[in-house]
Length: 280
Image (tube, rainbow, N blue to C red; front, top):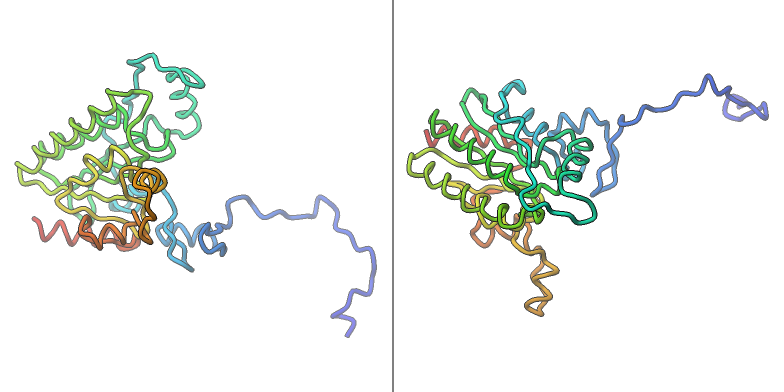
């Protein structure tokens, strides 16, 4: 069985004949550690085909998943943060904004767009965690407020997709005021009888949870999303007690009545379309 054994020693492949697998061809799930083709992962709405782990994605991916044929028109695309407090930590705030813009390719931590979802006109604002932890600053609040204003003017449903570490400390009180501004706009949306659906994704915390993320006519979430105000470690140290198993997961929040339902990302578009048709 010479075909099964190496009969010639010292066989070497010249460098110019070696073939490397291109970067990004395979995706390894951080949860179950199994690999899958990147295209397969993308076609599965960025969820693991083995364990259904929901990868953290940004506005571009959500817009592609939800808008028909991935077509949409972005609102207020060029809004940028100012530096009202002349804030400096390890670097000046404007320098941090510029470096984050260059690294992420984003203008700030939220993008708004309108288009059709299953032939239903809709306005969507989606947060991007890759921009300073999805923190809520003046631009985020203003983009949400303007998106709600567009929904009011055109009488179309509004969907908010939250993923955030909370208020942006570099803007202090200016950031915290966005909680009031967005909540007031949402009250106008409610008075007009226009549906507002809030989708909470992993993680949704801090001032975002304490304002617009939990004010939906329907508050929904992706599986296993972390949802809360303060982090589990802070709460544990404050109350001096062990926390319940699964504390602050979407499933725990649903069980205690703070969510309406949990939806798998692969089913998100169909579920939202069915919900909005019932509300029409």
